[in-house]
Length: 472
Image (cartoon, one colour):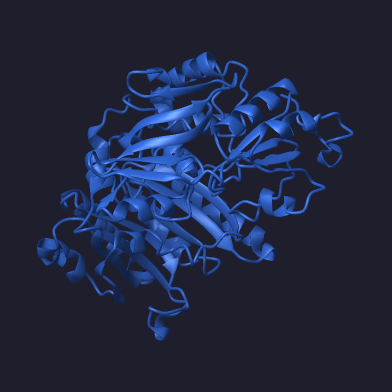
């Protein structure tokens, strides 16, 4: 595909946008239009790209029109859902951006435990609709994350141990393919495409809606959870305890572990503001009359600075970090999957945790065990099914002047930690500059099959602004 190198001359460059406009219900923006800069902005402010055209699609017909127009005029396509992608792959220089953000309908069917979700929804939209019925679909940890990006990469979150990954709960998807056709992919229709969508990223088409299985969560949507924080000096002891404890816990209880700086704001005690810490964020979704018993080992271990466990709506836990990490911060990500937390890895975490460069910079490890590990690694495109953690190191700060500081810290941390990893990463955490070998390593034994599905559904690699899988 050819990228237009001077997007400020899209009309003079020969794009007949008057052919596209009458086919759209949504707005079409070029660099000359008011609102263009807002439309091209993504969650990571370190990403500053200038697409030729941004179309705020209102429905699947708009998406079809955009795909056909872009392919007819040899124009790159970027697809934006929630805009949270680590590498900012929802936009590209000189491209046509298919922005799904106006497609936000959610329909819950509590009688059969399913929810239909438009491709532009964020998880806060879904949780708001489902938790009202005491239900939820496994998702992630930030409510403003887009449904499409998280789902297509796998979907690791608070409910993974009990109910599996997001892709394990995907029942069907409506997909606009590279030729502009719209198909339904499920176990009975386009089953190879459905397999690839469950972890293979945005390589195969534009998903305009998803249908998910829902599950009971807590009591009427209320869970018991929150942070338990320890001083950073206790991190090695906490990590060794955590790695042994987690597999023994009932699957109704999950907790991700991280290294962080205690935010300088309530509800944290003022004398702890700005203190470096090792924290575990717990989520218990079982019966509340068992909560004290199940959470006893969590409350009693070590010398915690904060024990913030209490009953709350699941929506509150899902959105707890949204205010701390609003759109517009500078981000640099590095990631790996870890099948175990070795003593050597713990020493690396200790060293870099003590050197957290800014208050927003952090390291997280999210469990992938329990129900997720009972799915065969070849059953979906997501391959990491042997238990373990999806790890991510993120340098984050509001100030662009600190971009080099946070990037250098994240890269050095990852370089020292990578030898203790499984070799690949959760693709949703990959940056856009890590290369094809990292993509291949992240799909392990499923990569070859993914290239065959790519060749069948997108032989011209129309959808390549992603963690790209090259057609076989």
